[in-house]
Length: 153
Image (cartoon, rainbow, N blue to C red):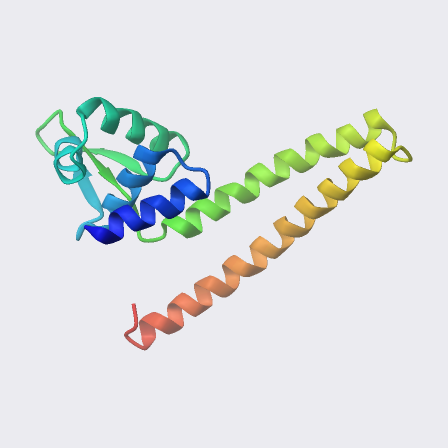
């Protein structure tokens, strides 16, 4: 599928591992949002080892979940419809941790030093992002609700 390879290339350009990007795009483009490792390997013409490494990475960063097939030991991998919302919400928590560490760095470097001012600017940027992300996610939920009401989602 052209979309899968094109979107995967965009994700790679943004810094994601190539096979992880392909797996994520394939899941996103599947009707159910869920595929087994064998189905992914077949669709992507990739080795089971490559699929395994990609799903491990995507699972670790919270971009997919693993589910067991009922009555089977085989796992299926799922991307959720609110995937981007969840991903950005998790990033907000990461930004909060980074900001805390940066605040410690300001004190360590000294607030009146060039390094301290540079670290302070970075901390202020992350603080700004955190506040904006909260508002942005609220607006997204409202917008998504409107789209659903109008039959566009």
